[in-house]
Image (cartoon, rainbow, N blue to C red; front, side):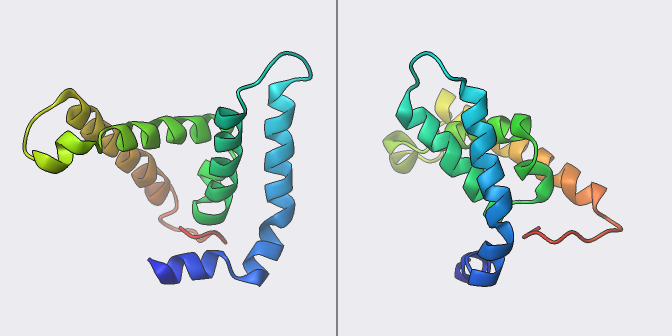
Amino acid sequence: MASVIATCTRPDVLERLLPSMVEDALRTFDMWGNHGAKDISKSLHEIVFTLAARMTMCREFSEDPKKIHALIGIFKRLEDGSNHNALIFPWFPTPARFRRMLAGVQLHRMISAVVLSRKDRREDDPL
């Protein structure tokens, strides 16, 4: 895992991804609009997730805002399913555990679809 992170954060990789990362941030700012109030914690989380996706995920995810929002929801359900009850009673079937398992299945299906679509081609991204 550390080697994957080291590879994704090498200066040459970051230099190559920087224009795309700036475009991602500007696109997110544009989606907010110029009026009204915005929850900065949620908005900042969205930008950080988008930039992390650009660095560590495949192009199909990082270039599609709908998939980014779907991934944010999936990872939120995965996080919500990891609570103290799941740690103490890992075998106990709680609603949070069921939602976590369902989110894991959805994540697996999304990644599997991309892997299968790339069966005969290679892209320049971490996948």
